[in-house]
Image (cartoon, rainbow, N blue to C red; front, side, top):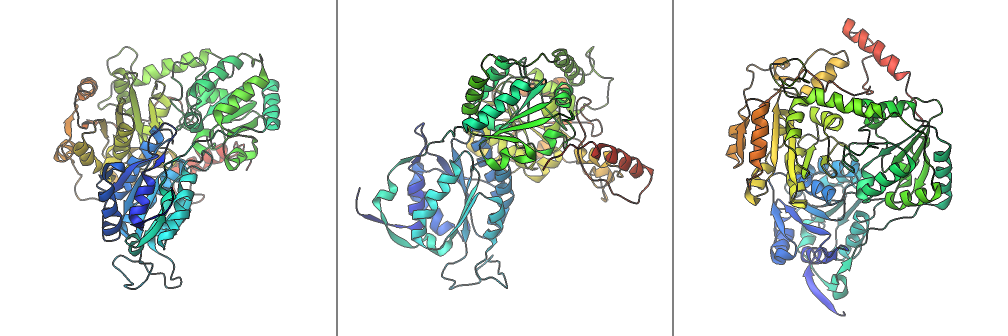
Length: 615
């Protein structure tokens, strides 16, 4: 292909994005979420209209939650596809910064396309322009710099020739995958340039599988052979690599039990006999017991976040050694780990070959059965012979039990913040592929938009969104988008009248109950929010469940609808999960306060003394 084609910079960007393909024959950037303003409507907006279905455009209600939907889409597609999000300069752009941080922490690809100031500076300062008194090159979009993997500012039309390939190379790199921000000066969007026709030739982006260094494989294999009590900590990297079956086969062949992080949960079903649940703060009793005695902790695709390690108090064996199988050396060498840098699927195969017929010593299988009995007890419906004493309002654990009883093999339980992420990790019995948690950033407001993104990515799934009243109040408007696009999913809205999770943490840290539940806040009138009426006002099917039996029936009925269903149920804000768990390092005030703070300080110092940290 020779010659040139004259296009505006915005038209060139959209044409180029429309022909960037995956190995499966789909567009890598599946489409663009857009809210238009004066910084992108004339350039990007007109270009998106012109390209039509070759690069579809979807309208959202809020820039942050549009991006949340895009993030959930990329996570569900295992980073094999992504979406773009565009906004105007100003508040639309800065609304997306939180979502960019969320994507960065979770290592998920999203293309952010905020409008930017005029490159020519002729009309400066334009509406919504932030002026730095000491730096004339700064705009609001510089806020993206610390929360994206790659940042560029398009200040000339020909910048596209270099910045677009760089952007996609980052997003499709399994080691560096994450969000990209291309701040697009609004006058440049409309400027014409003679682009080489070759630039628009379709390109296939392959997700590479880096091989581990044979020396690292040999060393890790030797460590496994010498271990008396090894345990695997499986993270999200297992899922993104497509190594779910490989992990199960490796664990079985070499008799090494595994636990799953929030990102790794659901890689394999809860009923796999080698699956001991979750580790750490929201860990299962059997999983944390394995961690306590483990002399070799083998991380696969995890960054050993503090929740996973119980702030480094779970792994207490004085002979404990750490191995980290990870795509990026930055993650693989954390906490003094022996690194094995490579793709999870490939590395498991190389390790298994190096181990041959080796099997680790026997471990306590009974503890897993005991744990499942505990889960059944705390999630049982009131009145069940295994249930806890009757409570006036259901606990979160009982709500989880109700949803579990009507779940199918296609159910995906999803959440992000508040009580439910911890409760779900420790109690939800996920089928393979049946769990989606945004807990790297634990961003309130991800839930509704994220549920929509999951369903868009995989329409075959029965998506059930767990959300508390606090998170729902923060961001619910994409419910209207899901209604407009006929994207069905089920929202289980647990109303405990405030921030029940943080209220419990406040008490645990010796604090007074203050400013979390509405009853403890400085308000004149306790709110009685009609969540059913609110959801109905956006077009969703909404109703209230008077009890757990009604909740089960309403969830089953929701599967027949082609719009979102919102089911509200009142819950008790006080009880925790009633099972599992571990200490989490949340600093307690060192001086001052009543006896409750003194007691919390004593407890804090005792736990902190047990931290086994290597940085």
